[in-house]
Length: 88
Image 1: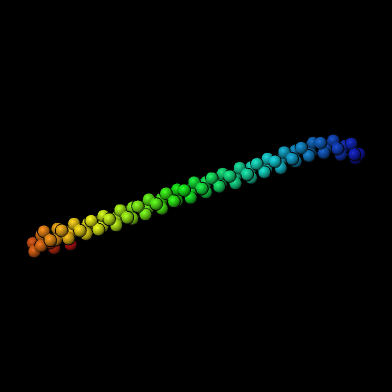
Image 2: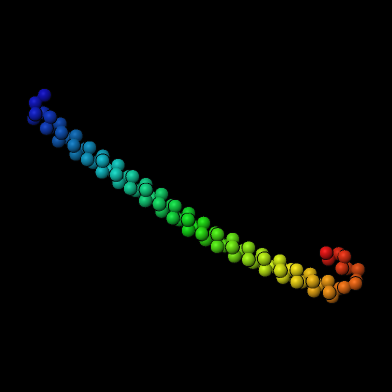
């Protein structure tokens, strides 16, 4: 095999190898960026859900407190009556 034949073969192989290397790098970068975007979206959703759960916990706590107050008011209104035993 002469140098001329080697160079003509290299003229085909080198650009193909460079093209493949660049394509692979772009694919890896694209996959990394896509996974990063998915992770950020998941993190944002988790933070929103965490805030919503905290809000709901506070709301349930307030409703329980209001319920206890209403029960106490009902007991004081119906104190001594027969219906008191059915409320508790």
